[in-house]
Amino acid sequence: MSTPTQDLTNLSGDVKSSWHRFLDVFEPMRPELYRYCRYLTRSPWAAEDLAQDTLARAFVTLGTLFHEVPNPRGWLFRMASNLWIDRARRSRHEEARVLEPHMPPAPQVDAREPREAAGTLFVQLSPQERAAVVLKDVFGLSLEEIADALSTTVGAVKAALHRGRGRLADPEDASSRTVAPGVLDAFCDAFNARDLDRLTALLLDNAVVEIVGVVTEYGTEAPADPRTGSFAGTLAPITYDERGGVPPELLEGYLATSPWCSVHAYRDTHLLLFWYEHVDGPKVRTVMTVDVEGDSILRVRNYFFTPDVIREVCEELQVPYRVNGYRYWPTRH
Image 1 (cartoon, helix red, strand yellow):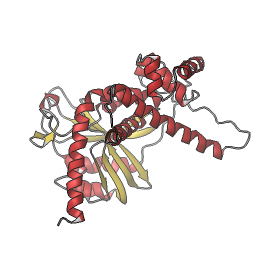
Image 2 (cartoon, helix red, strand yellow):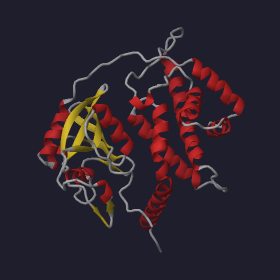
Image 3 (tube, one colour):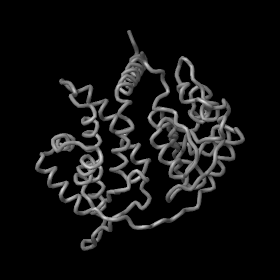
Image 4 (tube, rainbow, N blue to C red):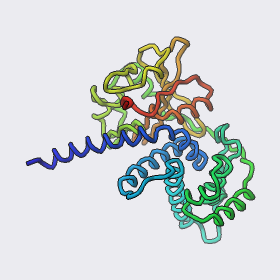
């Protein structure tokens, strides 16, 4: 008779295998999904979060469908649209609850959208208006496809397009820089010294360390595990073998050496860049965001397997970079 622990282990393996097969199918759509999410959201981090959540929602939903998905691209857009619209409405409702009775909320503007989004869409558009304009003017969907993606009618889409296009405005310039927390410098010093103990000592006991889309670790011990830990893995050179890694075609020119870390200002925050040596010089292959609580680290997010985020951040910072693809497991043939 199997035990609950054995059943859970078997289930975990089955789910992971199914998740990998799902991503194998949907990986070609990832750049376009990220691009759509980026137009809806106000930062690359929020866009990647929305893209990851969209894929997770699609994976769960796929297991409950009794019919084929006729248009996977439109289906993903629909998932992303519904998630974002729900979140935007909840956020606005929560903001409205804390405002004074007669004090309208001030529109918030992101003054540093990527160059790709030259026609930036701002938050004075309703969620449905913004999604409709993006799907029509950026991705060229038909009115019928937009109606399906937004779970509405063609007439409602036409109205949303008319209102949304009429309410677009130029961005305001509002730049501010914050001072980098000292814990980021301490992290870089420990990382560049290859001191795993000092790295983990910076973490709070309830810290969360994540390789986005791949693994989430809790506490201080898991990141340092020499076999599976994210900190231990980041300190090591990039590899590829039968278990996976970064495909050889994406490692062309890479010198198999350990990376080094630096702190960089980015928009109104700071982040960590990780530089890897190549035959034509050092290049960034991952970025990390760090949430700080006092002199300790509460959360780390490593964007190693998110090429869209790496590309956008590094191009905005004007630093050389290489991407690593979306997955660590080998492609199935």
